[in-house]
Image 1 (cartoon, rainbow over the protein chains, first blue to last red):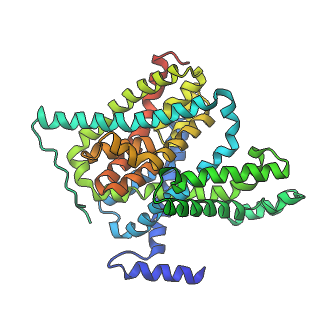
Image 2: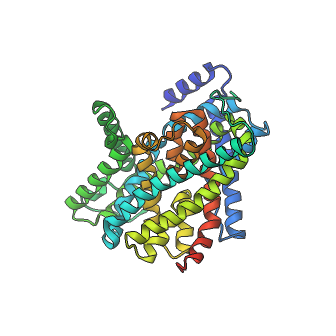
Image 3: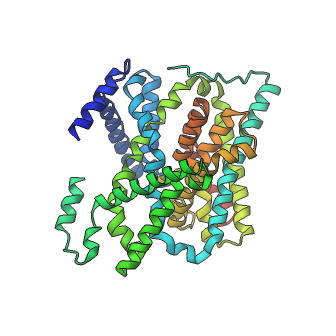
Length: 154
Length: 259
């Protein structure tokens, strides 16, 4: 384990300006803890509008990057690594359904079909609604809608 | 982790073969093993969509738990809670840093956010409303009970927001959790095919917002593979759609008289 950590550190510092991996972890841990505090405060103040820790954390980290409190190279490589693991990290959530197989007995496979259709509906409706608004931007308000394919803040 | 190990040591002694499974090591090992098997199947089948590692991992994981529970003569749900959940929870926790990490791709495409913030906001609000009507219609058409319908409505929000809303509008939180999980698995497995069939490719902003809304964090990871614009839009969708659902679903449920 120790050897593993060491090699991680080395590979992170050899990238041009990336912060050492433990510093990056430190930034994530700090933001998560602050977000948890805000989330707890929110739950107590507005019990009807829950705001989960990761959602607050995403906004906080985004604001910290936008207002240059945190430099992108301090959070980039660890973040990229975590995102690359998301499929795997989601396995426990999927397996969790083993604990609730019983609910399928009530409304059976109808639920599954409705969920599959709902997923497609959400994807397609939101995508086409966006297309409509961008069409309006171009044709009614005569503003351009070009999207650069390159990263701006790299 | 050490806390849960201590807690396990302090718990009453479990006798028989079950004792070998009541440890976080089991859940973590099983999760990695089934996911790696999924990756291998995906590779040798040259990318057959049903062999997406997440989907294979989920199905195989459940099958293994059902089989071991049968062999031990236990209820699957109970075996899941005692044996798999301790390890599963440790891995699950890492979705927290993984989710906030999406701030980075979002920040990298701040040019799109600054240029299109109004379109993004309007699309997500209007899109959420239209989707709610369609999902309500589909649920009715399939003859779901009011509990079932109420459980379907909040699924576009991230799980931690969807569950309390589901309960608030008279749904079953476990069914909503299943919906949120399957959303992600479906987008991960079928996303590429859906993008092609519905010709979404030409418009990176709409594709990204759609993938983030329908597939949540997993959908965002998928969108990021399509491109930086898609990934950043999916990340912003996860946040904004959750807040929109937070506010809109209770109003919608009252409107259609669900509770």
